[in-house]
Image (tube, rainbow, N blue to C red; front, side, top):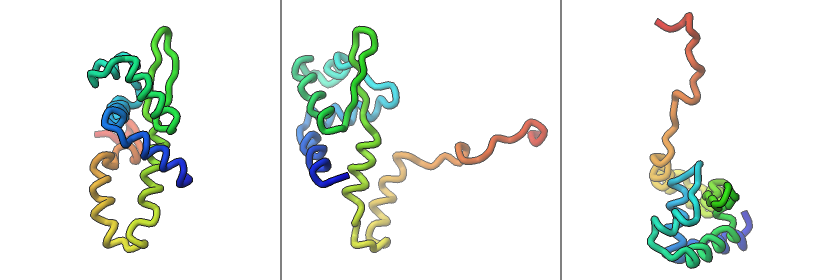
Amino acid sequence: MESLQAIDALAALAQPTRLECFRLLVRHEPDGMAAGDVARELGVPQNTMSAHLAVLTRAGLARSERRSRSIIYRADLGRLRALTLFLLKDCCGGRAELCGPLLAELAPCCPADDARTEKPQREKDMP
């Protein structure tokens, strides 16, 4: 991620409604939410919400797709990852003891699931 892209993303998130909207979209991954549902959930008029969603989309933090008569918005988790990595890239000058607590705080949101990495047991190995 380039500095200007990070600035655009951070600027988009530097407004309370857009920040809450983005967080709501992240919580609803991978299904996304219809624009009207986002507006209702946040208590924002639909035309105002459309403007906020457009800002998030231009910043690359959200994507939209038409499903029938609805427009479904989804958080772009790849962009969120890139922004987070951009912010942490030079964390603490490479001193792991300083970055460790920060990284430990991030880990609980997405705990590693050992079951996903282990190979399934074969039927003959099961008791």
